[in-house]
Amino acid sequence: MDLKKLPKTEFAAAVAQIAGERNIEVQSILDSIEFGLISAYKRDQKEHGIEVSEEDQFTAELAPENGSFKVYKIDGEKKTDVTPPGFGRIAAQTAKQVIDQRIHEVEKETVVAEFAKKIGTLIPCIVLKNDPYKMVVGVGKTEGICPKDEQIRNEIIPLGAKKLFLLKEIIRDETGRSEIILSRRDNAFISELFSREVPEVANGSVVLERIARTAGERSKVAVSSNQPGIDPVGSCIGQKGSRIQAILSELPTDEKVDVVAFSQNLNQFIAQALSPAQNVKVIEVGKNYANVTVPESQLALAIGGGGENVRLAGQLVGLEIKLTQE
Image (cartoon, rainbow, N blue to C red):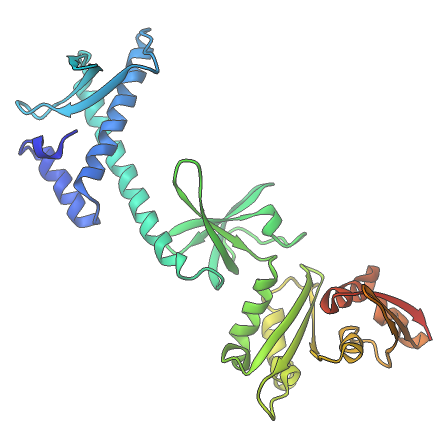
């Protein structure tokens, strides 16, 4: 459909107006309409029992004499008018549908482009739909999805609830459409919660060195400070636990968060990582393991429910921690 050949009709004026108001190129709208009309023509032929080969080539044009659409079959240099009788009504409906769809797509792309600047940050979303494979949420004026493997296991969020999600990435599917991918399971979800609630983390004076997490159950966060006089653990906990409580309020009720001091001294770091257990003694550190003893009274705390505490402590320090009673 050649833009230069577009006659001055009500349709052309309408397309130009829509293009101006929605900031869409006129040629982009016309190309979409051409594609839609050819598809509509093929459907019409099929409904009338006429087979159209996939190898056949067609073009659609706006007839200058009356502003109606016509479909032409292209065969080399030859162009044959194959517009079926009564196609005008189908063409008008198709043009309207294509324009509406194109407007929707462009508006979504504009919104997606804005969100692309926020990848890696937390954004408030409203849960719209939930199925076994994904959660669909409202993200501003558009929608995003939180796949099953980005959700917190066993977390049930009711429809209509407003929750924070990590904007993890924006992907394009095979049709070229953009999809906003969100997460509540990613470790970055925890780090962004700390940045949101702890000013010292946001300004960089407290550093989140490492995070180990089993989403929905327990997280361990190792922190340090690069400024004298700042207590990194105390900064994250806040007065009377105010900051850590604000972080916990955004997590499932059962998820605990341990904030521990990071240390370059591996033995000290191992002992800190096993918090809340006390009086931890590191006996031996190998290439991939550490042998540790704790008093009988601290053994259950060091292990944690289902071995969760010692497993996450091992992830935090990068070693398999082997616990024995002192």
